[in-house]
Image 1 (cartoon, rainbow, N blue to C red):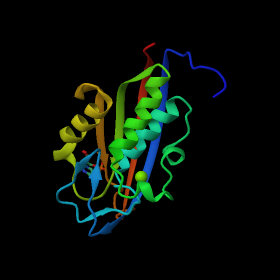
Image 2: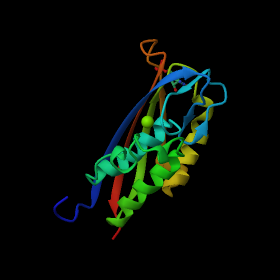
Image 3: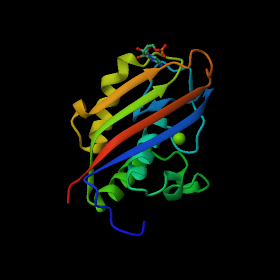
Image 4: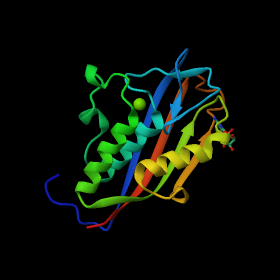
Length: 163
Ligand code: C5P
Ligand code: MG
């Protein structure tokens, strides 16, 4: 970035996907999914919601993406708790004088049904961002059987200038 950001509001958007395979945990938004038969194949903990959330934070200020800060070729990042990635992205946003105001996230996953975990995911994402739960919208979609071994996430958020 060549000049300091001055807009009162900035939109961020992030996306992530992981292949699903048996015998692995599935973690979404920091919440372990108890009845998942398959989990994410990943270098970190494979939390596709938190990866997309971190990218949404970074993108709002044109700060690139999480691969630049946490390369998946670095052995130090193996099994990394994705909450650490979100905390780093949030720090970078706050250092530039912005805070998140609200978040909308979508998870596309065929199985299991995530509806019963909607509040838990919203609460955890809200906690990570320092927001009330009412500012975190959580939607679930199936792929209608088109991608049964796949989890896809999309996150958009609004950043507000605080300083
Ligand atoms: O994708 P589709 O429109 O078929 O989703 C139907 C409903 O199933 C939605 O209300 C959604 O909240 C829910 N759902 C869910 N868990 C998923 C996928 C969809 O609870 N893994
Ligand atoms: Mg990921």
